[in-house]
Image (cartoon, rainbow, N blue to C red; front, side):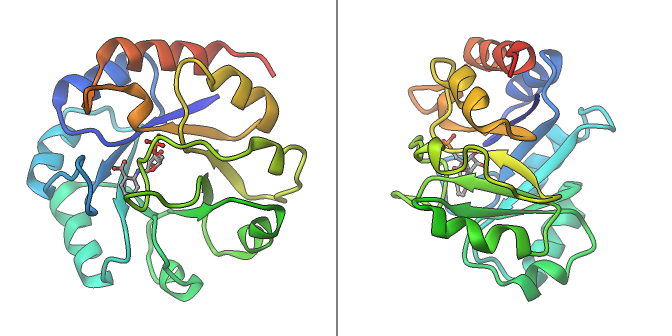
Length: 203
Ligand SMILES: O=C(O)c1ccccc1N[C@@H]1O[C@H](COP(=O)(O)O)[C@@H](O)[C@H]1O
């Protein structure tokens, strides 16, 4: 199972995630308590192995600003976590992760047709567009045929529910932000445990 740790703001958290096998790290450039500036993200990204996915998370950001942040930070994948249109997503040359809020089967129809390499399925929005620590009903996507689309499961994952979530949904990747935090800060023990579960669970 591939694992993305999102909301990275320190070199320590990034190094821990890399050490225990993370495939992708997320840097939030949207309104969030995990927001990072592009210069600080670059300092962390410069310490990472080449083959790891460095994902920039954006919410209803302009193309101009996204391109500026891509250049300044060194991210190599763009996560669109707002109301971005298919046309907007298609206008970038980097791989796109598009986030979708899932509350019923009807929400799944738009996913396969959307022009993106990865579809991130998250719970409906809470206080922020993402990173709210709330899970959706995984049975909605159980056995659903997403065609060729690579599915990233997100929303409220943590060390207690990760194995069950993977067994029900069998995604391409799982993504976590608040589930590996304590008192709003990334917790290195939780990152390690989350990755160990993600990397060993059998479907
Ligand atoms: O993490 C954030 O702060 C964030 C802010 C704005 C948009 C997206 C954000 N994160 C993404 O949301 C999912 C779910 O987070 P959680 O695990 O439920 O806390 C996370 O995987 C990020 O990709």
